[in-house]
Image (cartoon, rainbow, N blue to C red; front, side):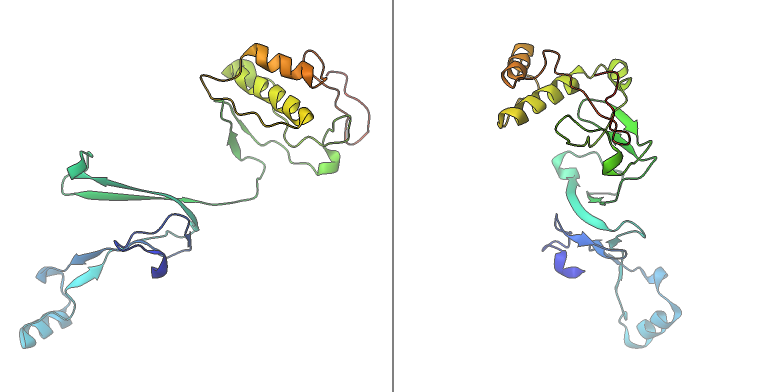
Length: 210
């Protein structure tokens, strides 16, 4: 566990940690009032404490094992607002990789979010005319409520880019215009509205709506 700590005793980013592993090494001086009866006896006889510090390291809580994604250090001398008596604060962020399950909440980059309502085998998912199965289906009611039109345009541009075999990088506030998106869609030979027919993975019949 100690091999993943840096010179200051702080866990490095990217380290895999398990229950009980040390994230931030820390020792606290023991006061005379904190000594056990045995330690008080040793101190009275030899005039020295058996152990002057106690281990107060930050450890991985039970069930929180994963990979360290980020470490942030806040210092009072750098202007950070910290509680009284605290001069430095270390925050460790741990991520866990899990299989998605019904009931899990997911969020997109466009402000939309939703809950997984069903998980189907790949062969039961709707598929495109070329046989490619759909990975994720989103509730269309999530678009007008969140007004995340950018997500729809991003999907259109992504499908057109795949057809053309190109990569597109478009910044958030200074990216592709509507004209750029639709001209790329037309260049890819897609329908003007960028919609396509989907087929039911269970019956093989096309859906009524595009």
